[in-house]
Image 1: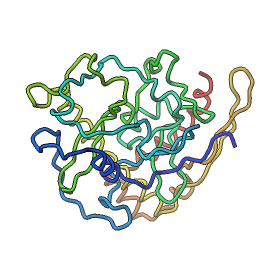
Image 2 (image 1 turned 180 degrees about the horizontal axis):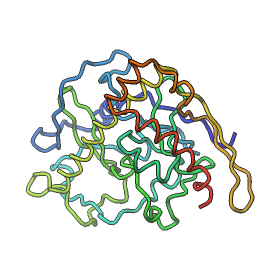
Image 3 (image 1 turned 45 degrees about the horizontal axis):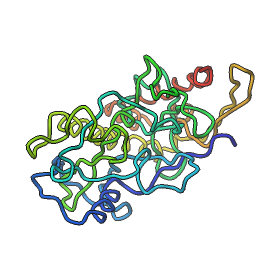
Image 4 (image 1 turned 120 degrees about the vertical axis):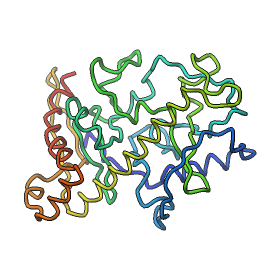
Length: 299
């Protein structure tokens, strides 16, 4: 099997945030951290977080041991003015960090743009997540060049654009804190724009917080969508065989797609409910995106 099975991580970003707090010698002052208020959620006993998983993550095959952080992240730290007053963000993006990722998590709100360039699939397993397939075989991202540039005129998934920032939970279930991977090459004291000025977040950091929060919300909606697909038993495991432009045989397996036959047999009340929720276009776009496999290996 050339393409290993995708797997959803069971840990939530809230659990990840707990590990970052344990590493800190002291708790930062409330006024110094970047927070976003959210509506109270009922905690799930199974996941230890909200009923809606904040951001489903995937595990991509790596020669290194599995990390405790989400895909791409290596050293996630809560951003505070006290500790990161000199830290700057490099505005010229370098996507080298994603060069070994053959898939990334995506949201259904991105499907209209994703379906133009990437096959859209789902993780196999109990808790499905939406994925954009970036390359075959494993550890191959065909959209990132040797210089770290993303392929011209192609939509870049929001999960990739969010890096190195992310939201994480706190002891207060109504609040989230903005964190960042401090090992990211886009963050350093030699960057372009400060994260904090006069002990306050800059506009850049406020924008990163707003973007991360919007993506957090979109992943919750996406989780509702994938849960509904699983409950109706519409996800079927799939594999593809491909031939590259130089005649080499390759392929992918261990992912799921929507079973079109079962979808067409949905009870009327379920179909109408999904139409009301705006999920039908996402289903059609996922099926349509399967035409992108050939163009994927053509590059």
